[in-house]
Amino acid sequence: MRAYIYRAALHCERCTKLIKSDLDASGQTPANPNDESTYDSDDYPKGPYSDGGGESDCPQHCDTCGQFLENPLTTDGIAYTREQVRRANPMHVSPTIQEWTAFYRAELCECATADLTDASECIHCHYAGR
Image (cartoon, rainbow, N blue to C red; front, side, top):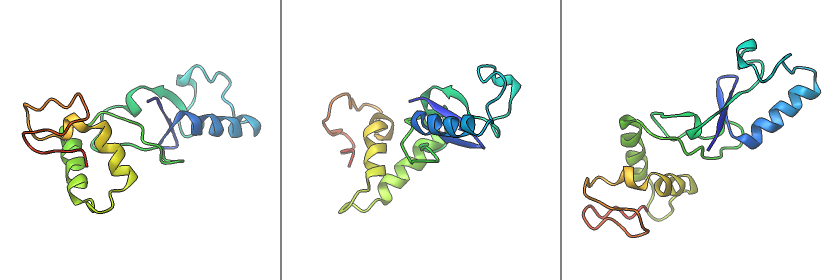
């Protein structure tokens, strides 16, 4: 998913369009918005950046609406996400944890031999994706 940076925050495409529209309506559009070197991301959104803004130490979400940006994770990010999944209440797994486990399923599996290309659970470590 593509992400944009504005005021030190990540935003999804839909929210960025709204931000740009508001800035444009108030006369705050840069002289050349296509040349990102002519303005700061504090003044006008920059992007798009592929892969949800890029590799990170945790799953990234739009800072405006909360949409999951589907970014790749670092090794620390995988460990962080595994821990959050482990801590989740098994009786009521939040939609956020469900999104993360569906998207990062193969990375979260702790079994190096697992093939999680289908919807089945890993038979080696019993990671069912919650």
